[in-house]
Length: 235
Ligand SMILES: [Zn+2]
Image (tube, rainbow, N blue to C red; front, top):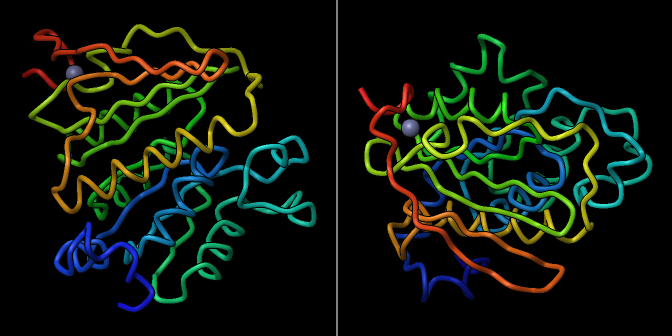
């Protein structure tokens, strides 16, 4: 517990135990997933499941803080797991080099208490959203592009799902531009949402979307409600 001295007064011993006994699935360890997984490891989440099918590319090295130059060409999930174990030897980390469409993925999501969105495309996000709703797993979404980021937490049964709000979202182009620290901001906010969900402290963004405009440094929120006709969460 000494390691967590500087957080125990706000999270409580019981809250810290809840983190230790939790399993968090991070889907995609790019810019967002690097930041969220690093802080979840430091915070003392007992088990991290890390999913990513891709290999590290040189163009990832401007913002994906888990990786170093010598990692180029290696699998992200494998290197991420190594780095996260170096950060905190008391936690358990399992890497999976798979796609969210793999049959295996459904088994992995069933094991998680909370799911974190580190993806870069809507097709994959909506697939994870569907499974998160099916298995009643809280799903912490974030997305970034250029100077802008958004965050929203799906609490199945209680609030809207990603499909209610973003079901019609058009796919962004591949290889989007992003200012390097921005995925760090959104990823760390996702980690805070995870801690709040697990400990039951505070209020998650499940009834509103948080938008960050880092170019003009403004943050605003938009209230959202369930779509009564949502084909994923309303039946
Ligand atoms: Zn829905």
